[in-house]
Image (cartoon, rainbow, N blue to C red; front, side, top):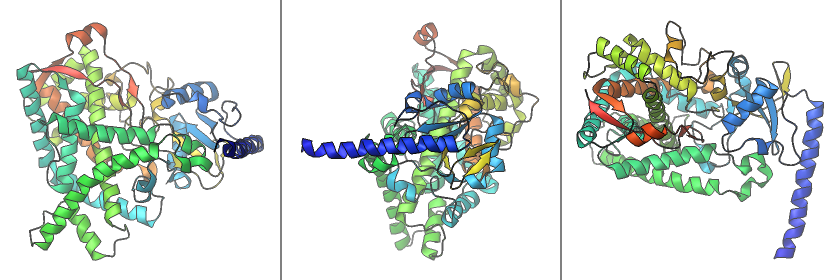
Amino acid sequence: MAPMLFPWLAWLLASLAAVYLLLGNARRRRDLPPGPRPLPIIGSLHLLGSQPHRSLARLAKTHGPLISLRLGAVTTAVASSPAAAREFLQRHDAAFSNRSVPDAPGAHAKNSSVWLPNAPRWRALRKIMGAELFAPHRLDALQHLRREKAQELVSHVGTLARRGEAVSVGRVAFTTSLNLVSRTIFSRDLTSLDDAGASREFQEVVTDIMEAVGYPNVSDYFPAIAAADLQGWRRHLARLFARLHRIFDEEIDGRLRGREAGEPKRNDFLDLLLDAAEDGDSAAGLDRDTLRSLFTDLFSAGSDTSSSTVEWAMTELLQRPTSMARACEELATIIGSRKSIEESDIGKLPYLQAVVKETFRLHPPAPLLLPRHTQADIKIMGYTIPQGSRVFINVWAMGRDEETWPEPEKFMPERFLGKTVDLRGGDFDLIPFGGGRRICPGMPLAIRMVHLLLASLLNHFTWRLPAEVERNGVDMAEKFGLTLTKAVPLCAIATPI
């Protein structure tokens, strides 16, 4: 067998060398944005490291706010300033409205609202989510669910406080967010705050999915050998998806059996989707695989990003007592200590809103957003972005741009007071949810949830770090993936007010 490998390896090396020479000539022919000089075959892959958002930010400081790299066989453009991001997400949004689909999601991407191309089916799925899940009137109608989940969170943390146990902030926020999504879709909780094992397992599956999708994968840089799945990410993700699909199939099958038995409808999101599927005229193509992919997207993004943001906010506040005290004082004055927070109260809490914005600035949930793809050559800021290029928007770097943010490494919510900065994609200084037609559809719910959960934790408890962490300092290391999570979960001591 071994001798038979040599001709194949020789062919592969020759092919890669040819690709390198062709790309090198193409770079000289085209007016690409500036960037590092690529090495043979691998291009600039060696510069990414384990924290690509940081590596690309350093390259932007050397080469400018719009750079190009050759990552393996793929030309990649990276925007790292508000002006450059605006070119892609607003001025030329239509040209960059398709995703660059990573290899790892495999079959999931064929039915996913996240990865589908800008075509009628994708628009139909977005329309369903926009009208029936994330529209303001639908969110207002489900305020009681979010209030109930926030109260359950406060009760659970209170129990841990009375026992003298530290609170895993990310886990309790994740479980709360997960159950809110499941109540909205399935009319029931999928796990429990009191069942640490089950909620931790679900969180690990979702976290692993987000890491696997976002982690650098050789299949994405050398499409010619993607079928080999050399790093095994596609196989790994298929196993993770299967675990979620079993849960979703149980919910779907149970609901279908209930319909056959004449049970009344619950009029939740699952019922709405099943009604549309039965009508048979939905442009979204709501078959079983599409429902699985849709639920996977909603549960992954809906629980992981909100809980991660709450955890990062608490991490920053615990290290800056003056900011923590100011946020708590505002809540005590406007709402009253230990009183439940209503979503209508959020607009009366400018400092809390500033804390959330500052957290999004320093710790954007998706540091590079989701990659985009261009299907034709296009001019951006005087440079040519060639057909077939992959495009990243480095919102992590934008949040640390010294020209936009004074003292960018410092957590300073006060920078947002008295300023109108819209998180909804209108102000390109701060776009944690992206912008343009591919902006995150769940943004309206995420904004409500993050404020509500954070306010509930601050208004019912005082918080401190465990003595050992206080001595050694908080580990601020990041775990890179599709979302940017804390590598070491935050555990803190709560005391009821």
